[in-house]
Amino acid sequence: GEAAAQERGIEVLRQGTGESEEQFVTRAVDGAAVVVLDRKLAYSLPFISQLSGVCPVIMMDVACDGIFAAAAAVFPGVHLDPVLITDLRWRVGQPIHGAEWVVIHPAIRAARGARPLPSVRSPRVVIVTGGRDPANVAARALDWLDLVSVPVNVDLLVGAANPRRQELTARAAQAKHPTVVWTQPGEFPRRIAGADLAVAAFGISAYELAYLGVPAVVV
Image (tube, rainbow, N blue to C red):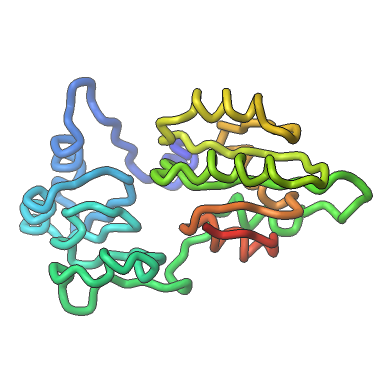
């Protein structure tokens, strides 16, 4: 968090009111030797090209046109997208992808050892579909679980950038099985680690589930 960064002597910059993303990034990288972008935003190709003229740009798991102008593009799951991986705009040697490039969040690593032992109860299923869930896998997963006759308890994790929060909350209230909607990211690691089964959209979440040893149906 911000406090931890400041304790380590890291300068924290805030985006100003009315300041565009491009204006903010341009201001933030002034004097930098290298810039790492890990914000899931639609950076344009001209902007990243311009930024690259100031210092090398490394982009982390960001699907946008600007990624083709970056000095390095770290995109762990890009090989699963046949259109993106074969795009002729990639620079030689890019993108960098594969499981070895996945960064596991410290909270997920901490949750690995805290997974509860199995007990006699209804199985708990967690639905985790990343930040935005553009394919609306969460709603489809709820439909699939309605077809399951065995009683289960469901945790639906809805990312902060998901535009269907209200819609998913209403859908969860109508689900066949008891379903709790979680929107606080701080709760996600514990809910994921304690699940008996996960339904997940393929992305970093799938790697996190594998790290935690949680059986998963990956869409």
